[in-house]
Length: 154
Length: 283
Image (cartoon, rainbow over all chains, first blue to last red; front, side, top):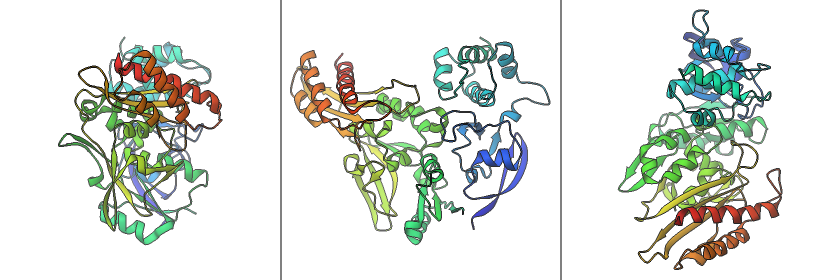
């Protein structure tokens, strides 16, 4: 058997998808489920644009075997806003100019959401440490940090 | 063509699958390193045996003063574990300094050791702490000191079909201090140009009773700088003696030229960072 039926929830919705055992989560999300908000950049776990949450844990979907997601609860960038309303974190990215070209933004926001879930009031040092490896090639890091700080209420 | 993925819940089942499929099988835990090697075509197994559901391989516990970290504990579990922090804060820092939080959420402690990448952080620190892995195969269980586990780049002394079940860090002698430092001239999440893990204990007269110095990223395996240790043991660790030991660590390094520096530069940085690590332990 080299393929199987995976059952998991994506952004709160139960989903079933038949996949080859060697598929990556990023391909299942983008190609099978058409959730193309999750981007693929470096493909080697370094750049952060494919960041998603699996049972709340931030991982690189390009390094994550899809079979590991069986039974899990997955959150992608499409699941951060609720009912068509942007989350405060997303509003903060807009008001603080937390992006420039935008390609890294889904990964930045998912990573920041994971940080705030774990540490609702992070220090700047904690923000910098956590966001290490969420690369912005426009170097918009100051705005990203301001946005996270604002979303944290600081 | 895809491999067939197996996810046993018992260790015996995992060992049986590996034995049955031999060279066609590969074991994974977090699968971070595996995914990279598979995508590059460097590994082409027909069967992949996932260990993540084997409960006996997980968890972190104290065993009569020794710290035992299960093979499938993630780096993130280890860096956040109060048991690890209490045992040795520098060890918690070594786990926390691996790559990024995304990788640390997925990559496991046992997988990191089995991968045997000499530029990784935990191997050097665990070697400095005199750790050993417990390995199991259909033939039985054995302890492998880390000094004997690492053979070459990405190569261990594990037998085919043998699995790491845990890493065991013995109790530190009272008064032992430990440090882990890492030279990152490029980016915060890069591999080190050189890393230094060291432990040091002084006797009541202030002389060095025991010391271990291990260099990471400057050889095919983590390198124990025994000549540097010998220069310090029994001596008063003043600035001159530490400088002498650090110069010996430079000679113990065996680096290659790459994007993180020339071999000559890395040797010199091994000296500088050994000196800094040792100074921090006697400050």
